Image 1 (spheres, rainbow, N blue to C red):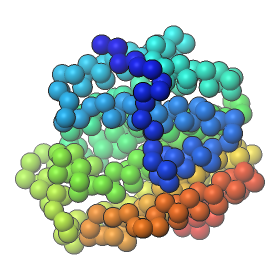
Image 2: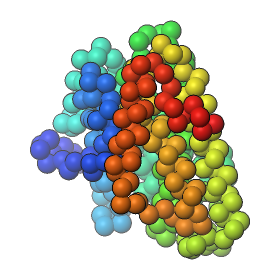
Image 3: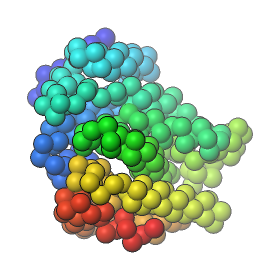
Image 4: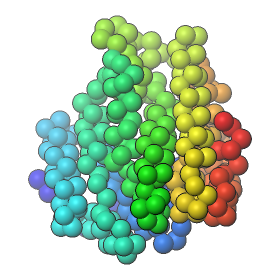
Length: 291
């Protein structure tokens, strides 16, 4: 099954003012085409499966995409979006990205996998980080001297970002059978996460995780060498927005957060400040002060 379609048939990868829209908007100009293509691929992979589509069709699509990630690595992509990615990375004299872990994480979402341990859940978050966020980070690499620092940053910050994103929609996802907290082996333990408002115990657990993720973002950003910061403008904007999302989600407890009227405007202002700071070689203010 080949899901390749004409590029004009793709929906916009993210609404205006959303995190992914702002990450693309404030990426360095030279990286913007590559970042946009990566985020479009994420949208394409994730929006092409769900309960409204036959399960076997969804699995077939993901299998096709897993094969496509290998074709991309061999510089033989078949899909219009992976061709765009190959072209954009080539223009930056960078190797094609390895997106196979992104497809693997989408497969776990399709299976509505519930994680009985923290270790299993952490592995799931790292799959997304390795499959998508790492590719954005490595776009800004200036050579082997920075590679080790960037790999650590991508793994630590990427896993924290993904966890924050999913904690912000935890109740909605739980009602669809997706649990992004450790739930043990007994199905009865799944129930409390579907309820609103959450119990005091659940709220404390979530607050602790959100705070831990916020600290991870700050520590990862502050560990970047100053010379590497300008090239990480897109990633640092993403981290700043992720930290803000963690704070908003924690303040909403024991309820799932509801976007406010001025959410997009406030996020845009924060993203602009983070981009300006990163462009000057400085860790964005929020990531320096919230740890």
